[in-house]
Amino acid sequence: MKKTGLLLCISLVMGLISGCSTNNEAIIVINTGQEPTGRAAVVPSNVTSITVTVSASDIGSLTQTFSAGQAVIYMTAPIGSNRTITVAANINPEDPGALLSYRGSTIANLSPGENNITVNMGPGDTKLMIPEPDPYITRRLRQINDFSSTTWAQLTATDFTNSTVGTFYPWDIDFDRQGRIYIANNVYYDYSQVIRIDNFNALNDTVIVPSALMEAADTKAIAIDRINNILYHSTGSTSIYRVDLNGTLPSLGTLISVTAMLSQILAMAVDDAGMLYIAGMTAATPISPLPGSTYVIIKINPANPAVLMAYYATGLDFALLTVSAGTKYFADIVIFDQYIYVTNQAGVSNNKILKLNKSLELVASYGQPFDGTLPDNDQGQFWGPHHFAAIRSDGIYILDENFYSGSSYDRIVRIDDMDGSGWQVFDSASIGLTFNMYYAC
Image (tube, rainbow, N blue to C red; front, top):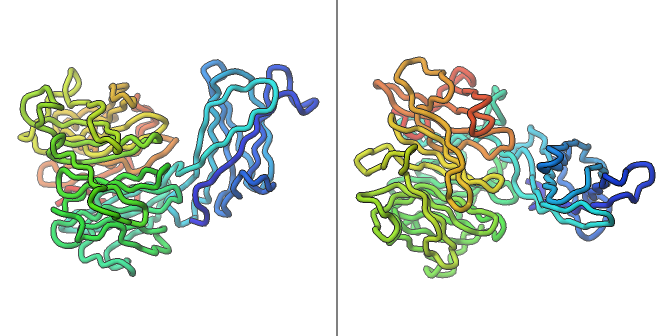
């Protein structure tokens, strides 16, 4: 990436440009940083356009796209309260980095007079990341732009130059504000580590957390706090460390132990308030009112890691998931537009995508199990939703895989929203070679 976290300054002005507005309109003025103000960062050279969206319940959504070469952008919008203003700086898709855009939003009241608002821009849409840690076949990480792609970038153990990677077993992926890629290398011997790369063309690979600090070497979850520049990584089954993005470990006092809460950590994500969401398994009675071991999502404040809220795999939609169920668990978490999205890979009994609010209340769920009839292209039937392939504004992308009748089935499924509209499948026939994701044999 050529620029760190982008910062655009927005001035909201109403009725100050004669002939260009009415009493019911505001003029949104965006300085892209090419006119010096001391406040706005210059748009990175890999940005090709800027898209501005103003939305509210009474006006719907208004969107315009502008050239990134403009020093100042003007856009009109109706006055009113609680306007959500979203700015996306769109990156050239040929750029080798993981990002397709920087993105930021804020809520403002558009009223007469000048209002100055700052939009902090962090990672927006990402390219599709496909970890293939299959221990018998590939052991690689692939990156593609979208479902129209016919080529891809690929990373294997031999591509690293600065890191000692004996075995490459990429399990979990996250990004910082610059779009750099962090990889949880989950190896069951001496090489479990967290590695950072700049992009697939110029790796500049750096070991952020070396294998000597990875305890039992079962690192299935990492999460980046992009506001505070903190990396959280699981070690063993029930411990979480927090380090800065250079991997500095000032002391073991940075350890967050959730042993009393969870018996296994499977996925993590951090919201813009610094709250940490963890998917895992618990048998602890202080957390779970249910008998046996239960798969659960908990929310903690890392500064005081007590459970704030918890969501269980129970209820009318979700049968109790127990240890004996084997493949049933919450496998991944991402946060987008103030909602928590979770993959619920519950084998043949309950394959779903969950949408929760930040109070961990279920907002929506979508999906059902594969009916066992091949080939399976039935809308809404998941083989086994494992991880999210991307964070995108144009839909939800899911790594969907499982093992049936002696064969592995691996694909990416895309849906527009939690109603399942726009169902698309991207598989080996789409890209010309076979995916080998988490449990292929």
